[in-house]
Image 1 (cartoon, rainbow, N blue to C red):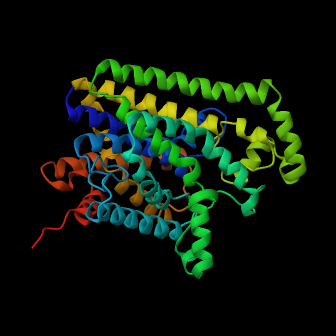
Image 2 (spheres, rainbow, N blue to C red):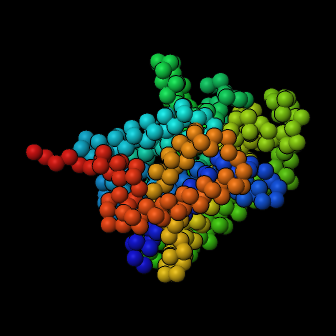
Amino acid sequence: MSASNRLSGVDAARGLAVLGMFAVHVGPGARPSGANYLVLAADGRAPAVFTLLAGFSLALAQRQRPDALPGPGSEGGGAGRGGAPGRLRPLLIRCAVLAALGLSLAALWPGILVILTFFALYFLAAEPFTRLSTRALAVVAAAGVVVGPLLSYVLGPLFGVGASGRGTVPDLTDLARGWTGLGDVLRGLLLTGAYPVVTYLPYVLAGMALGRLCDVREKAVARRLALWGAAVAAAAYGSAWLATEVLGGRQRLLAAIAAHHPEAMAAGDPVRAVLAQQYGAIPSTSWDWLLLASPYSQTPLETLGNAGVGAALIGGFVLLARGRRAARLLRPLTALGAMALSAYVVHALVLAGPANGAASWGALAAFCAVALASAWGWQRAWAHSPLRRGPLEHVLRLATAPRARA
């Protein structure tokens, strides 16, 4: 299987994750009814898969270039494994650009949970793990799936967010408050934010481990990745359902909600109401919260389930990309995934301006159609140019390119 087809499959999976983010941001709402189940399926999983793919792409990039660390939507061109200042410079620049974009977009419109600032810290945190052996990396990734949520649960009360106050997204206005604001930004990025490092870095590490362990150039490997990913996802979500609906977890949660979140008891689903108040981050009021797999609950079972979905999508799309006809049909999705960073930033700007408040099937269809057509058209127009991967992706490459020595 050619490398281009393999990368096309990965880009297609990333493109679907981008469409999933559109569904959450401009769709009609994630509700368990009718066609809204499609939006519910994307809720929480889209950013998780996007993050897993960043780790998977990092592993692919290192296989091709040992000193590469990709940004969102790229397959290479970044920081180093060796730790030398010359190799760390591209990583630091890339992370600074992502952080600046994330803080700026979050300040423009707080209506979406901008993930880019968190991505900057993911890549910084992931750099030391690129030096681990494959076996050690797999062990650390597996441990992180459990340890990360446990740390979030245990540390929450120590930072005053035991029952509420999680799910925030830092923006530029926070930095204007001096050292206090900077401390709040770091706390949000590490622990209390919408996509904190403590619970989202395991997705990056899991993606890196999968990228090393699974050589998807082999058809059998890609098939096993798809099947095992689906099986893991089903087992994780099924275990959460069993624990909450059959083994009494929901009743114990309702008791905790009555004690710590009495205002939520009037809602049709008090559990969902509590999670919605915190953008889905779990409170530290009952160990039974850790048995959920609800969107953004950031529990071990949700992390495992989302990672399984991501693995299944990677394996499935890589298999589809092997066929010439299917690969042609996937081109718009592949193009969107190749320039995911540009698409994400543009959609956030549109939501902050002319499409502010959009939330309907029509808005979602328009966003998806325009994004797919624009990405496909851009790649055709710049087919023989470095700009082919996307405008912001190209700017990042220029900013992190090695400087010529005099």
